[in-house]
Image (cartoon, rainbow, N blue to C red; front, side, top):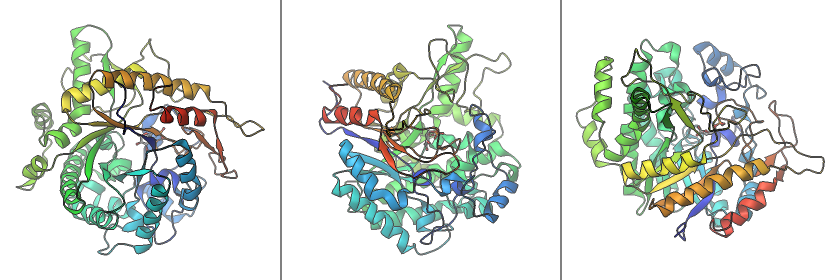
Length: 482
Ligand code: BGP
């Protein structure tokens, strides 16, 4: 048994966390460009890390600062991608997951013609990938919608955004039809209710009814995802389109049936966006939840048909941690709660950011997803954020990262041996980058160290960590020698 021969080993990054060059070659402002690095916020307080207000956006628009807006500078991948791609080639990557910044192609989202400079940039990135024998896997929307659409329309709450997104995607499909076969529509689509601004451009203080707006945004994204899946299949023959979910595997805190019920409820809400994209319909339990909470989703007459007829080819997901639920005696029903922090699990260690380390949870997740969806799976994010130390001789001894991956790969292979159809694995992230939630550089994930600190100081030089040659060997032996 073991992994398939053409297993797609690689790494995953996102435009807004690596590129920098936030205001060059016609790029417009994206929601990521106004995300602040907040040194005083507790790294374990997720909601405060990603929160924005109308006021904070206006302040951000007025300044050219990159010190406290680190996603504007990234790791300068925009200029250094040939060097980085060579390193990925050296690692033996079969694939690299990147995203295309919508604002490089349509700076405000409302233009009718694409920005040629943006298209040319990605054309060259793909050329560089192919030169290194790396197959691109491209996310169309990874936390970087045009800021203009957030400010003007409250993001995905407004149905007009569907047409604008479709225009952007179609421009990409036409331009890159000979370069890219594998596409993902929305990164971690379930995150709309976790961080509505980053994920869907919803500015919470502009919403009279946030829950209502979030579910409307979900619906509009589902329809958009289905329509661009259809377009992609039509424009690029042989293309494959996947959904992308955050797998937040939840365990009951005890065998008390009420804890089991609470955990079931949590998992049901976590599965819901995947269910819509794979089965092409809303689950009955979620429809009932919406009704009970007086959430009315505005739909066009043929929306449900669009969803039904354009489901995804494969299911991709991120896996970082598992969670634990205990019952709340006042509420044993489904709730919108979609947090990433649950109760403590005494069996598991956590990272410095409070994320549990649970390799068996990856095996469970693979089995659950395959059992539920019967579609090929793709792990497109998994990794460990850590505070690495660069020694004076420019080494990083990250045995803890090797241990983390080793344990996860063992469980991944066991799941495959149980019959799960797994297309590939891309680590998050092969190179240090700006953290999505905390905007820190010091939450490092890479096999490649980037000399840059939280405030943007450093040479930006790249150094191979100990884990670099280890991962290289794992890929070379197709996971047989860990
Ligand atoms: C996922 C995102 C990524 C990424 C990763 C790690 O939610 O898709 O963009 O960054 O998590 O999270 P963080 O950067 O917050 O540590």
